[in-house]
Image (cartoon, rainbow over all chains, first blue to last red; front, top):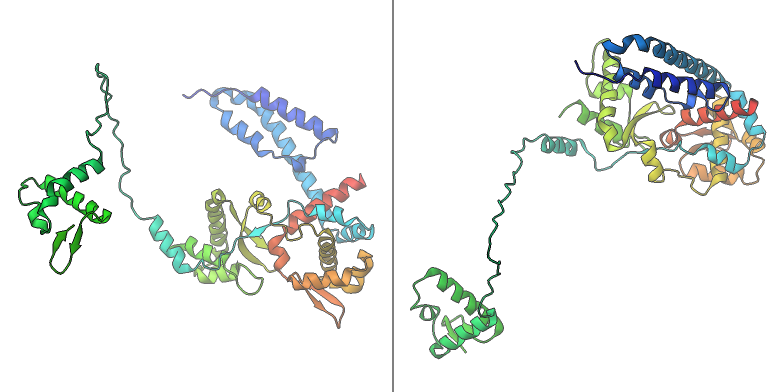
Length: 216
Length: 174
């Protein structure tokens, strides 16, 4: 059985402290939330400590009854509309009345565009079944004895383009096919095609649509 | 679509002018609730939807001036987003309070003469005009009467206000 701490003494002390404060007029039970006390009782009560809790229950309910009595008095007072009228006759300051409104303002929630169709659509979207979440597999770390060196290409990209340009410049004017005619490797062809595009962009070579020829 | 979808729509829609939300009868009709337990079912729906909305900082409220249920931001959020429409205008708020008390005393209708007498301010008529322009009151110049529109019932927790006032007066008596 799950063991729960016996808080009966602690809760009882708390209730006694509240009763003293209420009697001295320091606090009003109407301003006090009793729910946490009863939540505490509920959460810490079990078969093992139930005997210790009878007094806590009694004292807790005494507070609750007292609170109901205060509430009854308040409700009776609420019905006396004349007292409100009398209050106004006493000519209270504007700022005093203004402060009464504090914590009483409400902001209504109203959205013009919130149509039934929109809600229905949102509802369908929200309740749509989603696939299993993506799992991230962590990569195992490999400890290498050698120092890790980042491989830096021997030539800069612009140098590669210019080398390529120097190699083919004698072929111009020529077609695309002629530039790649000796190349068999698809990756190499792609690489060189990228160079051609860059050279076209840089204006080093030109292309004539009508003849489909490249020229300098 | 479920009941909550329809309820959210009904409770957040602008009905007409300053009216928001729906009455219990309208909700029961739209949801086709029938039988002798319709009120219990209605209450359960409101409570359950309220529980759903709570984490979103929203709550369901009842406007006693129009008997309509509506959705609003909860008090803490309302404070954060400056829900007070009389910010920096205590004079206007005090006149509205005076109208409230006069209407409460005379079954919903306040007399301009009484309000003038209670407020003891030269600006009362100007204040009443501004309150009318803002949609809070209706003024009948011929009869010298004012009546509250439901608007203030949406923007102000009247129960809380009267409890605060009662507590204040009780403490003063002590």
